[in-house]
Length: 66
Image 1: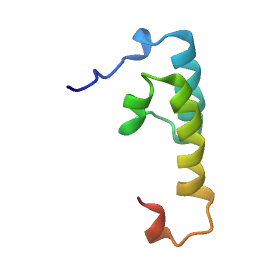
Image 2: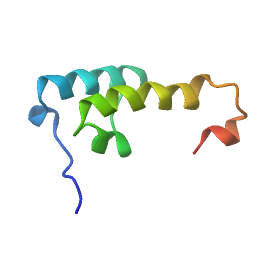
Image 3: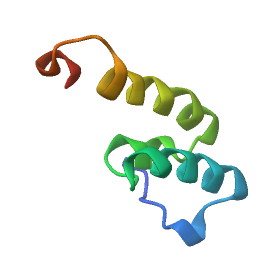
């Protein structure tokens, strides 16, 4: 079973807040973030970690893509 992709209009206030926080860093919400939006609490935990690992971690660029 696949979770449906939510449009911005379908998002609850908590989901919109999580969406907007994430989109501020990346300009959009795509990939697994669309799934995580079904749980805004999870999105608020995972998105900062993902952003850190992708953009700020002291890892070689090749290792950041996981």
